Length: 370
Ligand code: PEP
Ligand code: MN
Image 1: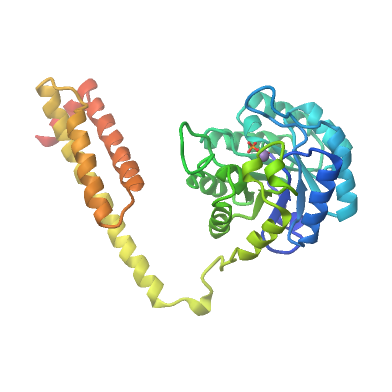
Image 2: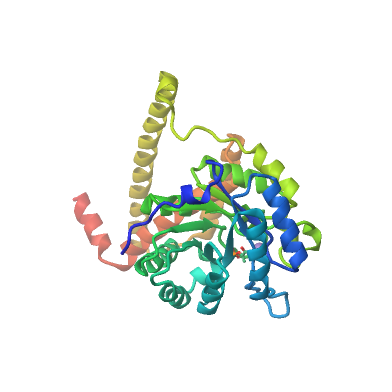
């Protein structure tokens, strides 16, 4: 498998974080060219994006203008001098995009999720020296994202990057696709050379919070941002509620603060060291407490086994959760965090009790005690 070659320098015209912007979909020649010209005028954008073939959830929605739009994008590239990026979902898209000199190909979330589709695209890219970005799969499966990157690398493409666009969920939430930041952070640990770009537009699904998500991504060491922009967002043919005008984009980017990646030697002082030592002590205590808690859980498991009582006691669990939410929120913890934290502990307790009740694990436990 080839090694990843960094694409940060090639994509960033301004030396700062990479900015990819353009409409969700190319709609008409005028809409695309005008949007791209206005984006170029902001002097903030490095790469122009446009969806040419659109993966829509339901049939009957606007499914993209098709390869006709690639000619408009090539025209926008000629007029602005900026690089261009297009989503490809099959081999035909790849050949069309390459024929029209698109600089960056990206695989959408609904493509990364499908290993057959990724492999076909990888095969079509054999021997092609182009930049390929993979959005995360719709579901929070890091192995699938990683596997997609490996398929493209195995085809010999070295200029590979990833786009984090959040992960789908069922039911209402603040986000269209909650970010689950731990997943892109883990991906970057697995591929340190990988250029990582955040797509706040598809995470938020609406204009609120775009800035906050972009700032958070930069603070988490992302290399760039992809934001959808349209000359008349409310009238956009797809993703109308999340797009912003080129002017709004400029203002949003100007608000982003670029903080130091590392603490400069000159600023290293004891204050931070002391705070970190305090955290280290508390983390050790937390591990110690968790381990003690699990030992008690195991004893309860033995008791339940002996007395033929079911593992899940819903009333008791509800009681623990309610009391913890009350205590925790009174002490400045969010309800969401307490629920997540305690649910993880509860799941581990259930697994351990299941092992004790339904395998030979209980014997080991008893033998250890005597
Ligand atoms: C898009 O970028 O317009 C798009 C369809 O994104 P995703 O693959 O993240 O849904
Ligand atoms: Mn979109």
